Image (cartoon, rainbow, N blue to C red; front, side, top):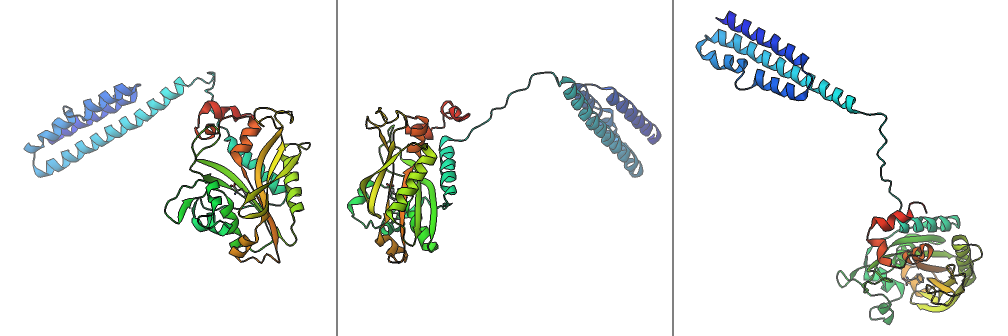
Amino acid sequence: MTQSISEKLETVRQQALAEIAAASAEGQLYQLKSRYTGKKSDLSAVLADLGALSIDEKRQIGGLANTVKTDVLQAIEDRLSQVVQSTAAASFDATAPGIPCVVGSQHPLTMVLDELKDVFGKMGFAVAEGPEVETDYYNFEALNTPKHHPARDMQDTFYVSDEVLLRTHTSPVQVRLMEKQKPPIRAIMPGRVYRNEEISARSYCLFHQMEGLYIDAHVTFADLKGTIDAFVRNYFGNSVKSKFRPSFFPFTEPSAEVDIQCFLCNSKGCPVCKRTGWLEIMGCGMVDPNVFNAVGINPDEWSGFAFGMGIERIAMLKYDVTDIRLFFENDLRFLEQFKHV
Ligand code: PHE
């Protein structure tokens, strides 16, 4: 009896392998799988009948049936992968036109930041960074702006707690840098800043600034003017003039705001420059001795200047963007316009 069962199993194996080899479609192979190894298959019937056999026969026939099953399953698996591959190869049309892939572009703010880093890098300024979540000390106190100082009103602040806040400007990075590094220092400090301002086309709750700091022996206001003038000519064009207007910042003395000739209307007067022919681009001044004292730098030995500008403001002027919110909305119709800039 075992003889005839094992012969039968052998026949099943041969027949199955032949049909599998001849199959040319995935569906056919799944059908063969269920026909030869499924619940109603000859193989399953043999395994179900083992009960009538002796222990030795059970072992022999059971073992054989299992090998046949494994062989059949393996053959199906192998043939399936061949069939799938050849179908894919047959449906590949090397002459079909390609599918264009969407190429991204740099964000305009990144482009402006990179350009600024480049211009100042050539003047010897290194890049430094600091945290966006700051303490009151670094954002205000060490910058000569004690609690209840009216100048705090210049910057509406998001407080996390009494002593912790989202930095309102990049000036705290100056303090951190001066604490870490002894003069001479020549660095720019780009980064994101936050202000609790009403959102409109001209102001947003977050934006970017780039701070600059230059400290050495005998640095004067003339060095500040020369550096800013060189920057303006390098960045906005060699013929663009800049001028200083007296201003106030608690951490610089004297302080100034820098205007450049409006390059949008050739300083004839347009809506962007409010018909003045001049555009305001940054604040600056000589580092206040109180700031030096707070970080342990001797103001009798060292002097320096600092400046800070808004990156969005520069990008808006450069690319004629009239609404600051566009920089943060990630609308592809806006961003795609910078692909070929
Ligand atoms: N931190 C100032 C602001 O945000 C800008 C500034 C930087 C002014 C450095 C002077 C010197 O308004």
